[in-house]
Amino acid sequence: QKAGKARIEKKSKNKKAKRGPWRLTKNDQELVGQVMDQFNLPVALSDWRNKAKVRNEHVYIPAISLPEKSKLHVINNGVELGILKKKRFEPGHQLAEVLGKVKQ
Image 1 (cartoon, rainbow, N blue to C red):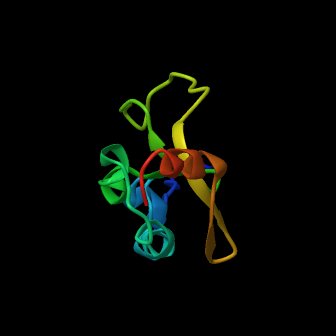
Image 2: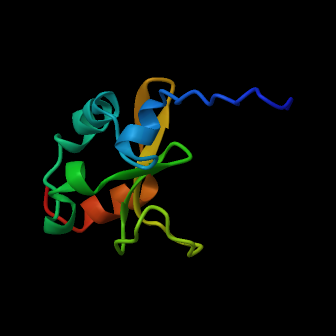
């Protein structure tokens, strides 16, 4: 960097940064909702739209609430609802186990 020239940094227009890196987008909520709304959900999963997080395309309900910038390494995120793949949602095995405990 030469003297007299100031470095100008551009603000990134990253949508994920505004909504938080782990939150579902509205489009993702619709994809997950198409599957979840078909079932009688237990009380713990009834508010999934507000609680659901995404990490590496895996949608899950966290077992405990942590700040998004926490430095703790989480081994198990909570109940995995499924995986977002190519504009679709594939329900996961943990979701099937939880739904199996509730009369449908």
